[in-house]
Image (tube, rainbow, N blue to C red; front, top):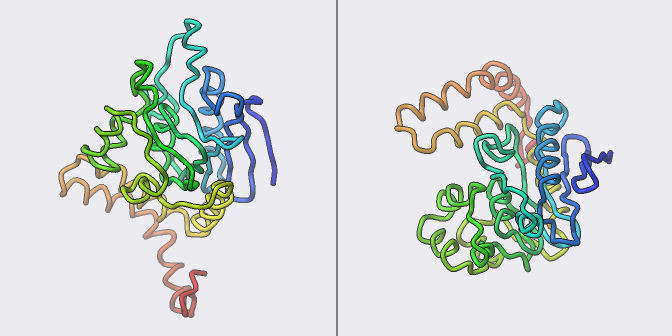
Amino acid sequence: MQGSTVTDKILIERDAAVTTIVINRPQVRNALDTEATAALGRALQAFEEDAEAHVAVLWGAGGSFCAGADLKELAGGVAYQAWAGRDGPLSRPARKPVIAAVAGHACAGGLGLALWCDLRVAEESARFAVLSRRWGVPMSDGTTVRLPRLVGSGRALEMLLTARAVGAHEALAIGLASSVVPDGQSRQAAEALARRIAEFPPIAMRSDRQSLYEQEGRPLHEALAREEDHAQQAKRDEAPLGAQRFASGAGRHGKLT
């Protein structure tokens, strides 16, 4: 595994097609200050531009995913920049899959960060919450948009209005978490899942993913047309080879490769 540093607050580790981005501020439960937020954006951009990187894992060091914005920095008068604003690092989905490995708390902007990811692998003691409700800090990181689309308006409103922490198994039941693993194993499990996804032919996988994101809010006929448009490259470049592999015997007896 190869490693690099954007700043000491954001670390990047690469293992073949899987990139793991580490939020490294455990002393503040991985709250993101201005420097860390900018560095996270650069790390995500580097992942997107790396042709050899197919899937990323986002993980917080020291047993906590992310506690959101650094409120001590805000208390010092630093202007809060929305992560999911027009030009923020979370203003659009990544071009390739990203998996959140959630330990401890994913709260406030940390919840928004987890929601931005495609999948969320949660440890049994993990908690998802809008704890910033107590301090008058609004959710300008995509949470009010992505959370109801994922779990429904009723459940999203309950989380937004009450600041109640949702545990891992409840999160799994309502679709907020993709899977639950024992404490201490979220990164390992997320990286294993990332490696599995990275084994698939990438063009079709990414085009299906992009179509899913773009269908939201579109009329059915328009969404179907976009699906067809996205599928063209995979139909041309990947599907014929895949069909030949299948015809030659690959995939028998439940084997994917």
